[in-house]
Amino acid sequence: MPGGRLTQQDRQQIALGLAEGLAYAEIARGLDRPTSTVTREVMRNGGPAGYRADLAHRATEQRTHRRRPPARPRGTEPAPQPHGRDPEAVRAYEELFTTVMMRSGLSKMMARVMVALLLTDTGSLTASELAQRLQVSPATVSKSIAFLEGQTLVRRERDERRRERYVIDADVWYQSMVASARALTDQVDIARQGVGVLGPGTPAAVRLENVARFLDFVAESLTRAAEQAREVLYTKPEPTPEPTPEPTPADPADRV
Image (cartoon, rainbow, N blue to C red):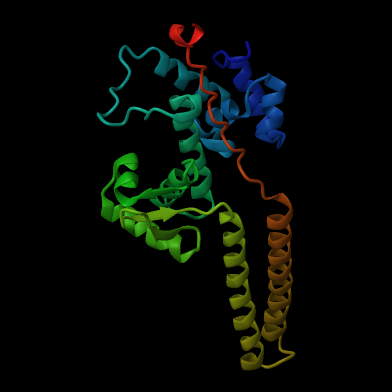
């Protein structure tokens, strides 16, 4: 039943879809389920390469038959959310987003800091706010911020109370792509230096020249695509309409 718990048949269909190389979204459509449900099911039970329907079903049954769920540590209850958002849904999404960012090469804490900033409407938090939200020490936050700042993913600014705030800009992916292009350009330069050191025309030098040409083309294409995307695709959030004030009841004396 859509929206209910996955059955053993559902899990077998997921396993079959993974074996056929289908994307999570395609598998989810076949089950008439949200993509997030399929993604969470696979990631909790061995990932795409290790998912087995029988083991996943057995693990779910064991979790279901536990007498008491593990107590949630104090202070980890989902914080109230603005705009009527479901706190549990936001928490699950934050965990999933963190996992995806870790696959891109970030450590777990760096990914958690970046996702926390991305999911705030203001796009900025202080060190103490981040530490409280993530339940870690300010020193741990500072170390992660230093790395993210070096990658131009996060910047610092002072607010009106002179507190240091960590900010993630709306065009963070543009900044990330430009930084990646610069890193590729550095590799192009070092590869071409090697051509001169190893001798033009030698097998090693030819290999380095091919590397340099390939990366040079990718860096230029990446920069051009990032510029075009920022120009064409960037959108601003719609302003929240101001509530219409209710009319003040007329004073009976005014009617005389």
